[in-house]
Length: 90
Image (cartoon, rainbow, N blue to C red; front, side, top):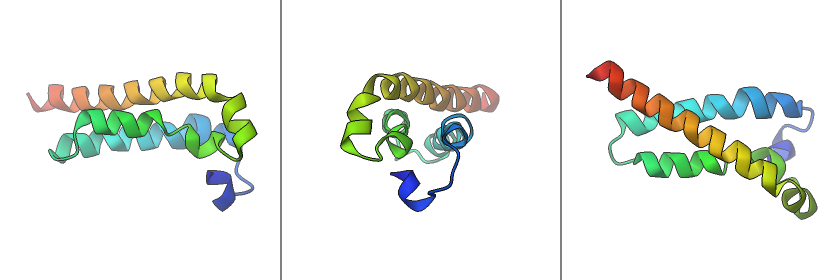
């Protein structure tokens, strides 16, 4: 889906740079905004791979397994950022 907006973007940039940065920002938002719960932030991070996998239905279903693996990784990044900010605060 993100390639509809940024057609010339390198896929490795989306996977290794942009999505982890978004996951980090979600961890910060979850920390500072009490109404935005950490589980909701982890859920949003889990579906981040859909931004660069879901260009069409065939691509989505063909890469569903690796999307789940990356989604779990991005969720862990969000959780680690959230817990790290709690550790710094206390």
